[in-house]
Length: 147
Image (cartoon, rainbow, N blue to C red; front, side, top):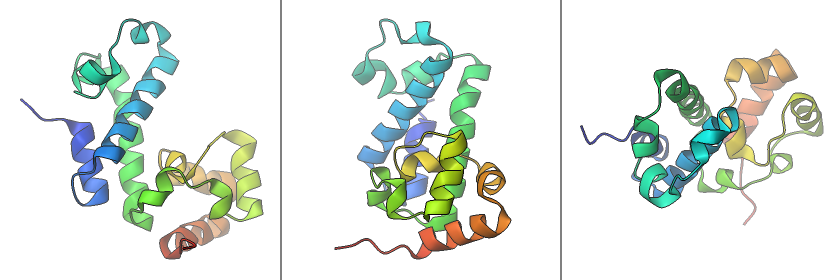
C-alpha cells in the first residue's frame, strides 16, 4: 500500500505531479493537525515522516479527518476556479474585493489564496453572502495575473 493521498491530491489539483503543491499541502495538513494536538509534532522529522506521508498514515482516523476535509475543500476550490501556481502565495487582496476581504477577515486569518482553498465553499458563502460568493468564484476563475 504505497498510496500517498496527499501526493495524489496535489496531482489531482494541478493536473500533473506537482512537488511544490504536494509539499505545501503536507506542511499545511501537518500544521493543522499539530495545532489541534501539539504534542504530535514532538520529534517528527518533516522530511522523513511528513514529506514521506508516514506521519499521516499513523494518525487515528479522527485526526486524519482534519486533513481529509481540508484536502476535499482544496479539490473543490480548484475545481471551481482552476489551478494556478501563483495562488500558493498570492495575497487575498490581489484577487478579492475589499468587501470580500473584510467579511472573510472578520472570522478567518488567511495569508494567501491557497489558504482560502481549505475553507469550504459553503463557509465562504456564509461569510460573504450568496451574491458576493458567486462574484468571488467568478473573479478567481477569470483572474489574470499581472505580468
